[in-house]
Length: 114
Image (cartoon, rainbow, N blue to C red):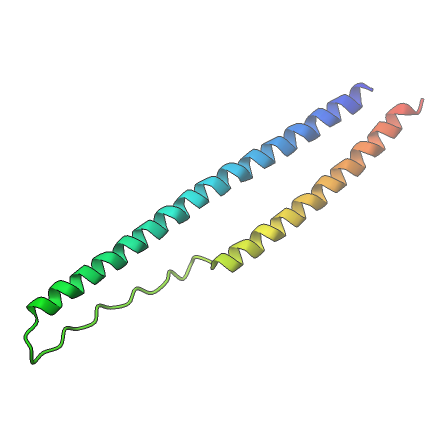
């Protein structure tokens, strides 16, 4: 009986630790994504203002050059890829939980037998 309580406690602690870790990580990623979106929005607004000022100061014979486009970073996966990765992790976690539940059940039944 003590082994079952011990195993259950460890299982609950592990699940809590994993859950809180992923929750905190997801929150910080969401905050980062939000900040990145705000920066991109601000950059777009500044580009528009820059073009307006440039067009007011431009010489009539010479068109204003287009600002260079910013290439997306090569290391960051798209939102679809991030979602797929998250789904894969959730499935793997669910499989691990099932394996742990099976082991706990086996330990409990072994402990119940004299």
